[in-house]
Amino acid sequence: PDIIQSLSRDVICWTKSTTNCPLAIRTMGILPHSASVVYDLILDSNRTKEINQYSAGRKDLWLLQSSSECIMKVVKGGNLPPLRKKPVPFVTFFRGDQTCKDGRRYLVTTRTANLVDDQGNWDGTKFLSEIKMGSNIIMDIDGDVNRCLFISSIEATSPLPMMVAKKVGLKGGISFINGLRSCLSSS
Image (cartoon, rainbow, N blue to C red; front, side, top):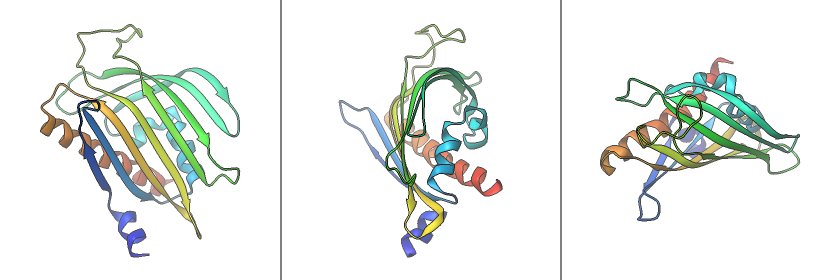
């Protein structure tokens, strides 16, 4: 109960760097809604700007599969990271899975393609920073239909010095969870 109260206000963050994984960031917090509502919100490309302050928008390019248990799609969008005037475009493969039949646990995984220009073509002149892979685990809290545990993990690359990249990455992870909280509290 004390940890649930704390995680409802705060965000726990970890970072790790190795030669194989230049930057890994994990954030965790409790969100003020059920796992199914959070899952739908994350997959809704029309609401990306509501939950991500750095988003320049996102649109679905291809819906590869859509069922009650799994959604696979390719999306295109852009982010406006700090210290940048122009959006950094991306193309990402999304897969969302309901991991149990009762709709209480979900997994959203992402894989971002190389940086692309506005037409979807690779552009090596772009700011070479990207979230290569991501996973979001969303689980209802036993006995509480109005809150869920949210764990987000990303692997990223950045041309910035590692100390700066970690700071920016941690700030982005915290901002993502707090953006979800804000959006869910107002709906």
